[in-house]
Length: 216
Length: 216
DNA sequence: ATCAAGTTTGACCATCCAGTCAAGAAGCTT
DNA sequence: AAGCTTCTTGACTGGATGGTCAAACTTGAT
Image (cartoon, rainbow over all chains, first blue to last red; front, side, top):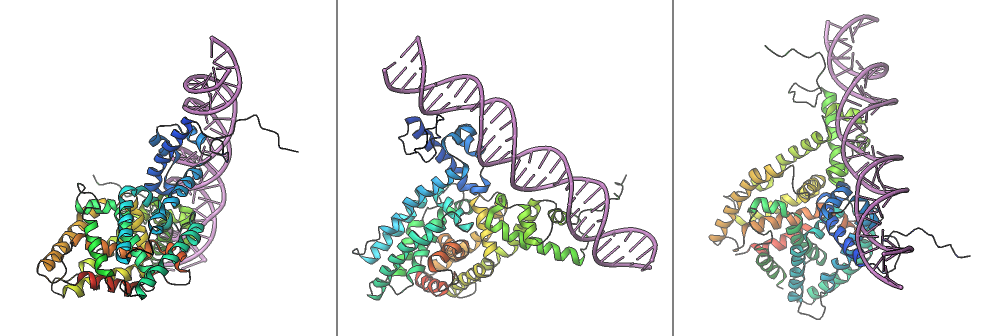
């Protein structure tokens, strides 16, 4: 016996896969952008639906018409982030020139800190809190990718094509040095003066650093 | 006309400077330790007094007998942190051997990530949120110290005693690379396996990195 | 123009949470 | 032991906050 069709309209944020109207597409994007702004600076608990609603220019009940809950908004942001978070490392090409490949990876990560600082801070907030909502992703997808690329780096080192350094620490160093310019941007601005862009001079510095570090 | 002495006992957490009893000293330390644990993983807004009270093994009203407010506990933690946060950089000795001095600074910072990871995360949380409670400190004390030491590093570079690199980015890189092992410890543990210590192998890697980076 | 579906919101509720208070328990001093 | 101070806590309050709901408004297909 099939479940009877409910006369009540489903919430668009629910599991429904039906196509979305223009208004829905637009407002969901507006909400996610506002939520990214608020979550990335205040963390999940520190953010309130009222803040997000104000930032989005919508009413709080309207937010909850588009998403089932505060948690659902946050989950959607993280899900979208994961899609793009692995890409720069994934692009590390085993058939390319080792040094150039690693430098290019570093540059892609630095570019992400410039283009998506809020996403970087959202991620940092999540890890700081013990990665409660990303543990599965990190232990499976991210770990597998890192293991794979670490093997590649190790092979390059063994073949004498780059210096003999620990591949995991090499990857961590790229994450650390590039994301720092997004995550600690307020500190950098306060020290260097608020006029400058946080990554000013970073690319030259990091290129210098990695070309010296990697030379066999 | 002098203000009349109130018959009500002042709260010990207040501005009073009178000496504190053994019980007060002990419980204030217990509370601060518990609060550091909770604030460093959940941030200020994410932490609750009940969590801190449970962690401390005390009742919530008892917490507020020793500190005026949640904010006062947090402020005290930050105040104590600032005292020790500048020390490693302050110890950079203008009369020492440039490379050895910078390596020693890096090692001191790495040691702080090992010994005080919670303090590092407390600091990171604060910066991520725009440093609302540390702006004055960063703009004055920290900035002055960084400017002073950047000048020293620049002088060393100009004299050809270390490589010609941007001194600010050099300092940022040390902060970034060392604190990463504290702030992103959960991620590192999930990738490398929870058995290992997060900083395992870090010292060798960073020594290799900075000896290559700094060589003139 | 009509009307059903989709969208918006004011008013509301339940829960959580920082902080209060008065009364009692434990320590200290004599 | 008495009496004072310090310490502890159960019960409470007021405000914030995530979430609900029914009614009103808008949109778009016919």
